[in-house]
Amino acid sequence: MRNVFSPVVSLVLLISCVFANAGVASEGTAVLVENGYARESIPGTSISSAYMAISNLSAKNIKLVAASSSISDRIEIHEHTMSDGLMRMRQRDYVDILAKNTVIFQPSGFHLMMFELKQPLKAKEYIVITLHFDDKSSIDVSYTIKGLKRKKHHH
Ligand SMILES: [Cu+2]
Image (tube, rainbow, N blue to C red; front, side, top):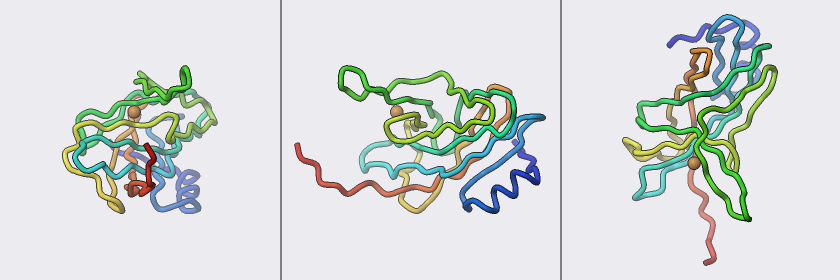
């Protein structure tokens, strides 16, 4: 799907970073997605997660309802929540992006979960994920791939 860039959003794009995507997908709805990144896949697994900040520049509430990519046929919208002191992950049907608001997808919060990756995700490469909204608009977003943290775990 094509995105028509508005002058205002393009200006924001120029000021912000190279990997930000912006689009005015349908009349009255403007979505800006910034800071998209995905995690390098752990060797031997075929899952990963992706994060970003979605800004709704319009005066109309929208919902993120789906995500799709050539890298995976199954991308789900997830949310991490704490219950009984345990971090749990649950699937969400949608995430509200209220008018003039930004929702940040980040570790320990909302994220996109990719299953059955068609190829491993390697650090410093990038993937494109298309975000779909309830007003039938969509936007292609570049996600840079960040390497796994090489922390030592104590078990
Ligand atoms: Cu998840």
